[in-house]
Image (spheres, rainbow, N blue to C red):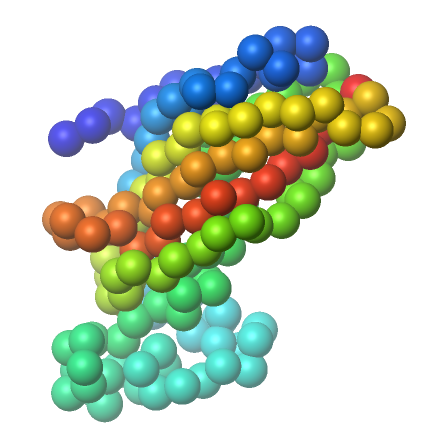
Length: 156
């Protein structure tokens, strides 16, 4: 099993050279029923496949599952665990280009993210635009939970 990767920390001036860089994998994080319930409260999405533990056991997944957007939102702490840029005034989550929820995450499952910087482009205002391919894996599962291309910007 692949060990977690040390965090990559680079100066702003070095970011332009990162296209094609494999950033490795994060530590495993357990997705708890409490996390799922809190996300349900925050988004008003209390669908039984997420929050009704007993009913979900009889449902299509055999257990309650995390909301796809909960799993996707974990890109933020995973990204911070893998990567940082020094010498910047602003860091922005710019958006997503492609997201696929390819496998449900059952309550109690452990997940982690692997990421690769696909492209770096200069942007107006002394900024750099990073295109990163991220895959959120589920421990013991062949198919990942989420495959996403996410975008970030860093400004000097």
